[in-house]
Length: 257
Image (cartoon, rainbow, N blue to C red):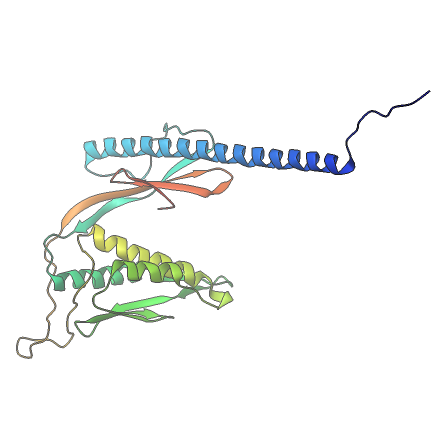
Protein backbone atom coordinates (compact mmCIF):
# COMPACT_ATOMS: atom_id res chain seq x y z
CA UNK A 1 0.00 0.00 0.00
CA UNK A 2 1.41 3.35 -1.03
CA UNK A 3 1.11 6.34 1.36
CA UNK A 4 0.83 9.84 -0.05
CA UNK A 5 1.72 12.83 2.10
CA UNK A 6 -0.65 15.78 1.84
CA UNK A 7 1.02 19.06 0.78
CA UNK A 8 2.02 21.24 3.77
CA UNK A 9 3.53 24.67 4.44
CA UNK A 10 7.23 24.87 4.92
CA UNK A 11 8.73 26.62 7.95
CA UNK A 12 9.79 29.52 5.74
CA UNK A 13 6.28 29.96 4.38
CA UNK A 14 4.80 29.93 7.88
CA UNK A 15 7.30 32.57 9.04
CA UNK A 16 6.45 34.76 6.04
CA UNK A 17 2.71 34.50 6.72
CA UNK A 18 3.07 35.20 10.45
CA UNK A 19 5.32 38.18 9.74
CA UNK A 20 2.85 39.57 7.21
CA UNK A 21 0.00 39.19 9.70
CA UNK A 22 2.07 41.01 12.33
CA UNK A 23 2.84 43.88 9.96
CA UNK A 24 -0.81 44.22 8.97
CA UNK A 25 -1.85 44.19 12.63
CA UNK A 26 0.68 46.91 13.47
CA UNK A 27 -0.51 49.04 10.54
CA UNK A 28 -4.10 48.61 11.70
CA UNK A 29 -3.23 49.70 15.26
CA UNK A 30 -1.31 52.76 14.03
CA UNK A 31 -4.10 53.62 11.62
CA UNK A 32 -6.72 53.32 14.35
CA UNK A 33 -4.61 55.46 16.69
CA UNK A 34 -4.25 58.19 14.06
CA UNK A 35 -7.97 58.11 13.34
CA UNK A 36 -8.71 58.35 17.06
CA UNK A 37 -6.32 61.30 17.50
CA UNK A 38 -7.84 63.01 14.49
CA UNK A 39 -11.34 62.59 15.90
CA UNK A 40 -10.29 63.95 19.31
CA UNK A 41 -8.55 66.92 17.69
CA UNK A 42 -11.64 67.70 15.64
CA UNK A 43 -13.80 67.58 18.78
CA UNK A 44 -11.37 69.83 20.64
CA UNK A 45 -11.39 72.40 17.83
CA UNK A 46 -15.19 72.30 17.84
CA UNK A 47 -15.14 72.97 21.59
CA UNK A 48 -12.80 75.93 21.05
CA UNK A 49 -15.12 77.30 18.38
CA UNK A 50 -17.99 77.05 20.87
CA UNK A 51 -15.84 78.74 23.53
CA UNK A 52 -15.03 81.59 21.13
CA UNK A 53 -18.75 82.14 20.56
CA UNK A 54 -19.34 82.27 24.32
CA UNK A 55 -16.51 84.77 24.77
CA UNK A 56 -17.84 86.96 21.97
CA UNK A 57 -21.35 86.82 23.41
CA UNK A 58 -20.08 88.16 26.74
CA UNK A 59 -18.00 90.81 24.98
CA UNK A 60 -21.06 92.13 23.15
CA UNK A 61 -22.81 92.62 26.49
CA UNK A 62 -20.01 94.08 28.61
CA UNK A 63 -17.34 95.29 26.20
CA UNK A 64 -14.80 92.99 27.87
CA UNK A 65 -13.86 89.35 27.52
CA UNK A 66 -14.45 87.25 30.67
CA UNK A 67 -11.57 85.63 32.53
CA UNK A 68 -13.34 82.27 32.58
CA UNK A 69 -16.03 80.39 30.70
CA UNK A 70 -19.53 79.92 32.18
CA UNK A 71 -19.78 77.20 34.82
CA UNK A 72 -22.26 75.30 32.65
CA UNK A 73 -20.00 75.32 29.58
CA UNK A 74 -19.82 71.76 28.25
CA UNK A 75 -16.98 70.15 26.33
CA UNK A 76 -16.45 66.86 24.55
CA UNK A 77 -15.32 63.83 26.49
CA UNK A 78 -11.79 64.23 27.97
CA UNK A 79 -11.48 67.80 26.64
CA UNK A 80 -10.72 70.82 28.81
CA UNK A 81 -11.05 74.45 27.73
CA UNK A 82 -9.56 77.18 29.94
CA UNK A 83 -9.21 80.94 29.48
CA UNK A 84 -5.50 81.60 29.96
CA UNK A 85 -5.58 85.38 29.59
CA UNK A 86 -8.11 88.16 29.06
CA UNK A 87 -7.97 91.91 29.35
CA UNK A 88 -7.25 95.07 27.41
CA UNK A 89 -4.13 96.37 25.73
CA UNK A 90 -3.05 99.58 24.07
CA UNK A 91 -3.18 99.95 20.32
CA UNK A 92 -1.40 102.71 18.43
CA UNK A 93 -2.16 103.92 14.92
CA UNK A 94 -0.15 105.78 12.30
CA UNK A 95 3.19 105.28 14.04
CA UNK A 96 6.23 106.96 12.54
CA UNK A 97 9.35 104.79 12.03
CA UNK A 98 10.89 106.21 15.23
CA UNK A 99 7.68 105.63 17.22
CA UNK A 100 7.65 102.07 15.92
CA UNK A 101 11.10 101.60 17.46
CA UNK A 102 9.98 103.31 20.67
CA UNK A 103 7.04 100.91 20.95
CA UNK A 104 9.34 97.91 20.48
CA UNK A 105 11.65 99.12 23.26
CA UNK A 106 8.69 99.86 25.55
CA UNK A 107 7.17 96.41 25.06
CA UNK A 108 10.56 94.83 25.69
CA UNK A 109 10.83 96.66 29.02
CA UNK A 110 7.23 95.79 29.90
CA UNK A 111 8.09 92.11 29.52
CA UNK A 112 11.07 92.56 31.84
CA UNK A 113 8.89 94.29 34.43
CA UNK A 114 6.32 91.49 34.21
CA UNK A 115 8.99 88.89 34.95
CA UNK A 116 8.86 87.21 31.54
CA UNK A 117 12.67 87.22 31.48
CA UNK A 118 12.85 85.05 34.60
CA UNK A 119 12.95 81.28 34.96
CA UNK A 120 13.63 78.61 37.55
CA UNK A 121 16.90 76.69 37.43
CA UNK A 122 17.33 73.00 38.17
CA UNK A 123 17.79 73.73 41.86
CA UNK A 124 14.52 75.64 42.13
CA UNK A 125 16.06 79.11 42.26
CA UNK A 126 14.51 81.89 40.17
CA UNK A 127 17.03 83.38 37.75
CA UNK A 128 16.78 86.58 35.70
CA UNK A 129 17.91 85.29 32.31
CA UNK A 130 16.85 88.46 30.45
CA UNK A 131 17.40 91.61 32.47
CA UNK A 132 17.01 94.72 30.35
CA UNK A 133 16.29 96.46 27.06
CA UNK A 134 17.81 99.64 25.74
CA UNK A 135 19.42 101.48 22.90
CA UNK A 136 21.92 104.30 22.53
CA UNK A 137 21.98 104.78 18.76
CA UNK A 138 19.27 104.97 16.13
CA UNK A 139 20.49 101.90 14.24
CA UNK A 140 20.49 99.23 16.95
CA UNK A 141 18.95 98.03 20.19
CA UNK A 142 20.20 95.63 22.83
CA UNK A 143 18.42 93.01 24.91
CA UNK A 144 20.66 92.24 27.87
CA UNK A 145 20.96 89.25 30.16
CA UNK A 146 22.85 86.00 30.38
CA UNK A 147 23.12 86.02 26.59
CA UNK A 148 23.09 89.69 25.62
CA UNK A 149 21.96 90.17 22.04
CA UNK A 150 22.29 93.29 19.91
CA UNK A 151 19.87 93.80 17.05
CA UNK A 152 20.78 96.12 14.20
CA UNK A 153 18.24 97.75 11.92
CA UNK A 154 16.33 96.68 10.01
CA UNK A 155 15.07 94.32 12.73
CA UNK A 156 13.06 91.63 11.00
CA UNK A 157 10.27 89.57 12.56
CA UNK A 158 11.74 86.30 11.27
CA UNK A 159 15.13 87.15 12.79
CA UNK A 160 13.61 87.41 16.26
CA UNK A 161 11.46 84.29 15.94
CA UNK A 162 14.28 82.20 14.47
CA UNK A 163 16.52 83.23 17.35
CA UNK A 164 13.78 82.30 19.80
CA UNK A 165 13.28 78.80 18.40
CA UNK A 166 16.95 77.99 17.78
CA UNK A 167 18.43 79.28 21.05
CA UNK A 168 20.12 76.55 23.11
CA UNK A 169 22.38 76.46 26.13
CA UNK A 170 24.91 73.84 27.19
CA UNK A 171 24.31 74.77 30.83
CA UNK A 172 22.20 71.82 31.99
CA UNK A 173 21.56 73.51 35.35
CA UNK A 174 19.87 76.41 33.56
CA UNK A 175 18.04 74.66 30.73
CA UNK A 176 15.01 76.77 31.67
CA UNK A 177 16.76 79.65 29.94
CA UNK A 178 15.83 78.13 26.58
CA UNK A 179 12.12 78.30 27.35
CA UNK A 180 12.45 81.82 28.76
CA UNK A 181 14.21 83.11 25.63
CA UNK A 182 11.66 81.49 23.33
CA UNK A 183 8.71 82.86 25.30
CA UNK A 184 10.22 86.33 25.68
CA UNK A 185 10.98 86.88 22.01
CA UNK A 186 7.72 85.31 20.86
CA UNK A 187 5.72 87.62 23.10
CA UNK A 188 7.84 90.57 22.00
CA UNK A 189 6.90 89.97 18.37
CA UNK A 190 3.23 89.26 19.11
CA UNK A 191 2.77 92.36 21.27
CA UNK A 192 4.53 94.60 18.76
CA UNK A 193 1.98 93.63 16.14
CA UNK A 194 -1.02 93.56 18.47
CA UNK A 195 -0.27 97.06 19.74
CA UNK A 196 -0.08 98.58 16.27
CA UNK A 197 3.63 98.20 15.57
CA UNK A 198 5.12 96.58 12.50
CA UNK A 199 8.19 94.89 11.06
CA UNK A 200 10.83 95.54 9.97
CA UNK A 201 11.86 98.10 12.56
CA UNK A 202 13.96 100.54 10.57
CA UNK A 203 15.11 103.00 13.24
CA UNK A 204 15.30 103.61 16.97
CA UNK A 205 16.67 106.90 18.37
CA UNK A 206 19.92 108.39 19.62
CA UNK A 207 20.14 108.55 23.40
CA UNK A 208 22.17 111.79 23.21
CA UNK A 209 20.09 113.53 20.51
CA UNK A 210 18.88 117.13 20.94
CA UNK A 211 17.67 119.98 18.76
CA UNK A 212 21.17 121.17 17.91
CA UNK A 213 23.28 118.07 17.24
CA UNK A 214 21.28 116.44 14.45
CA UNK A 215 20.71 113.12 16.22
CA UNK A 216 17.52 111.09 15.84
CA UNK A 217 15.33 112.18 18.74
CA UNK A 218 12.93 109.95 20.61
CA UNK A 219 9.28 110.54 19.70
CA UNK A 220 6.48 110.02 22.26
CA UNK A 221 3.82 107.48 21.35
CA UNK A 222 0.82 109.65 22.12
CA UNK A 223 -2.56 108.44 23.36
CA UNK A 224 -3.38 104.85 22.39
CA UNK A 225 -6.68 103.24 21.62
CA UNK A 226 -7.74 100.36 23.83
CA UNK A 227 -8.43 96.91 22.44
CA UNK A 228 -9.75 93.83 24.25
CA UNK A 229 -8.11 90.44 23.96
CA UNK A 230 -8.26 86.89 25.28
CA UNK A 231 -6.73 83.48 24.73
CA UNK A 232 -8.48 80.20 25.56
CA UNK A 233 -6.56 76.93 25.49
CA UNK A 234 -7.86 73.44 24.79
CA UNK A 235 -6.25 70.20 25.95
CA UNK A 236 -7.14 66.50 26.04
CA UNK A 237 -6.74 64.47 29.22
CA UNK A 238 -3.81 62.07 29.04
CA UNK A 239 -2.49 63.37 25.69
CA UNK A 240 0.03 66.13 26.29
CA UNK A 241 0.94 66.85 22.66
CA UNK A 242 -2.55 67.83 21.49
CA UNK A 243 -2.98 71.49 22.44
CA UNK A 244 -4.90 74.14 20.52
CA UNK A 245 -5.97 77.68 21.34
CA UNK A 246 -8.33 80.39 20.13
CA UNK A 247 -8.08 84.16 20.54
CA UNK A 248 -10.21 87.27 20.02
CA UNK A 249 -9.86 86.94 16.24
CA UNK A 250 -11.76 83.62 16.51
CA UNK A 251 -8.75 81.96 14.89
CA UNK A 252 -8.10 78.42 16.15
CA UNK A 253 -4.40 77.61 16.13
CA UNK A 254 -2.28 74.62 17.10
CA UNK A 255 -0.17 75.06 20.24
CA UNK A 256 -0.60 76.71 23.64
CA UNK A 257 -1.55 80.34 24.26
